[in-house]
Length: 311
Image (cartoon, rainbow, N blue to C red; front, side):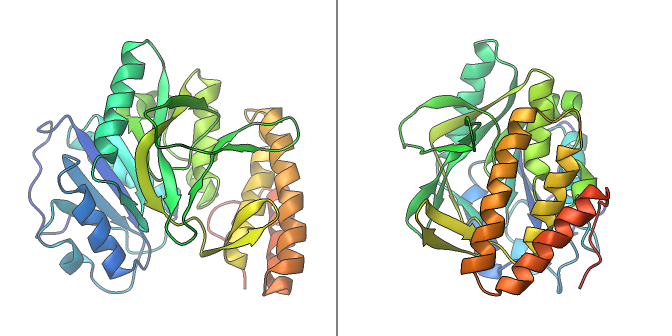
């Protein structure tokens, strides 16, 4: 792998601490600077894995501890995280903090996540990851943690109390993962490219006896989707039609895997039905959303994976 020449050198096995892994794709410069500034005093290393963004990100990273791994093309979120994990492992870090480019941690977020992970480990838990409480600044509301429900997913409203709770899976951004867990469970599935990459990994980890935990007082500012709109069920994140393609396609791919629990498949099918109706009827461009969702269903049933080549 190639790092940017302006970043400070990290000696192998020099850290043993936490490495933040940020995957970027045409990032907002102000957002990246805010994210890097928030991490400087919280982690021992930062690696920015870029999926072929236009322009040179080196200037954005100047003055920080961050290393740049330019992939040269868009290989997807899963590949980006895997490249960052490989970098962190090579340089001796033992904990990995996954972050999206539009996230900003609270000043004590990493400290609280590490404390929770230490506590759970000392209690003998096999920890897949501990996850931060996500707060959407655009809506002023927190994003719930996911649990399986009798008919559909239940999203547990987080509080800012120092409460650690077992969850069925987490969102990747704001997740602190022990490297030892990655080494046993395996890397992210690059065939999924983007969307449900984190879900698949957490379900795979659960099948091997590892649990995900939420940490209520570890707060991460994070925008889910391009925007959010209010519905009867609360705020609904809105993605592009192409992202809806990946959500539907990858859902079908996971539904066809025997390793994925039936409970998730049932809950997710209910959620897909809701999305199909909601985005077709209420979210412009309606026809594009419908076409991409239906195309995703078809391609997923055909077993098509990787980066999509569709118009």
